[in-house]
Length: 86
Image (cartoon, rainbow, N blue to C red):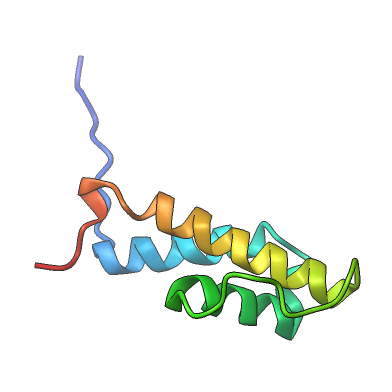
């Protein structure tokens, strides 16, 4: 009986990019709002910890989802397999 191995020829950077895109797409339809991108960038840069939008508006929800997506991306790419920096 032959054993067939699946070989993934994609680079680690390409796999990380696809993982990031999949996480962001999972937040649809909020991922299309500018506030989502602002929340994502705020998390990644560590510049803002509080939601700049008021109340329970769509922008406030989109910012919150973007911030959360940033956390999920960081967790998903923090494993030893995903370490790209030397």
